[in-house]
Image 1 (cartoon, rainbow, N blue to C red):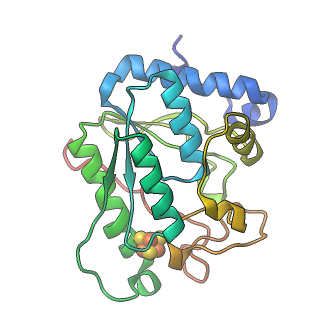
Image 2 (tube, rainbow, N blue to C red):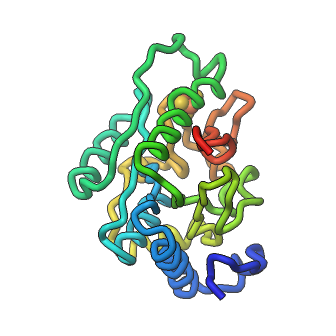
Length: 236
Ligand code: SF4
């Protein structure tokens, strides 16, 4: 049976598999998905630690695998610098951005709308323009309260498969992978951030919840931008 069709108990696997077994499982998931979807498999690279681990795994599976980055006008300078370095190294990463006019400080008054315009819309465009049938993400089920129910292979939008190949990795295992394979990361992690996003909506915290520093003081605190919760297919 293909690993893509597995019905494994993921919560058990988080604890039962060791680091090497998780790395092999992730590579196998990407490999089988690439065999099934070919160049319509595309990695969504948010430039966070989880995404760069997935990008590195995908490149080990097949250097031809493509990807896209969604950026916004509010990304910190360090993230923009890291993005430019990454794209220079991997020109097969396409950058998507929404430059349309929005209300001042929309991220304070209506953060969901701000994320819809600046993040969800460019992801939809990337999926449409790149002909994506399977997108690969760096989601992890131990990352926070909103990420416990995802599966390794999902079809939330009909005709668009989402592959979450490192879903069962712990935060420590991501850093273990990045250190062992010397994968470059955003300089902001050295400042103490654990989860990176736009500058006005991201703070350093010592909370147990890895995403606790996101959208502090709003209804979205510790939550999601919408990329993983909103419909993404513009045409079915
Ligand atoms: S993270 Fe903040 S600034 Fe960035 S798109 Fe969402 S609400 Fe807007």
